[in-house]
Image: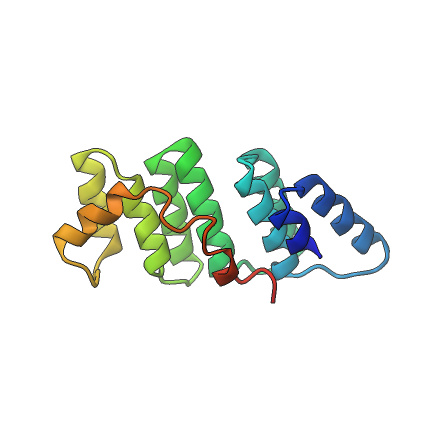
Length: 155
């Protein structure tokens, strides 16, 4: 149900539903928090996105790679390449080797030659030639909302 609200761009409705479920005794998990985080990221409300992220952690719920990638993408798009780098490194610190999606996000946000060099260095062993890296960096929003079904929120 949370995903339905989020997919309909009714994040406030999703948040109200989430609060009501908690009042009725539902114990949230990374999937339910992830749906809300994704929703707030989708509407560029980074304050609420981070509020839900911190609330999830305060409840002792371990983050997963999907949530970290969502936060990395939203912060990078709204706050710049440096913010994406911070979250990319956080992903590694949490024990999740960044996947190709995270690498593509990082590469797509790199605008200057310095940023591109840093992104390529961080991304490490890419399965792409340098021509493909340049192609990826031109498609900033390659798979943000088109492949929502790949996210691990509605399991």
